[in-house]
Image (cartoon, rainbow, N blue to C red):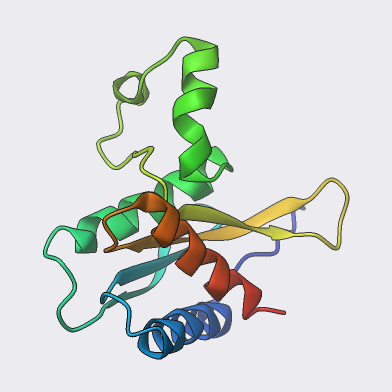
Length: 141
């Protein structure tokens, strides 16, 4: 029998709440936020009022890609270049290498195991989306 720890709705709520609160504190741009479990299945999605139209799908793609590849999306392009493969080689239109998808790890075990991922989209620079995703993960404690 295989047991696997994964993110659940409670953790997704904490992450999304922290990201929204931080966005409001910073008077930041509204974002879309997606949280997925370790399989890449959507647990929670929020599109803040005023978030860009394309951020809806992109946030979900970022979270999904991070969970599937067990890598932050900002690292995917370099990893694929090292493997001499491209995004299209996966045959999955939901895969992206745009930064802002961050893996949530169970650091209580060795080696660390992925619990799921969070994807944030809405800022002009992916580094800002990454920062917001990390704020959400930090809310888990």
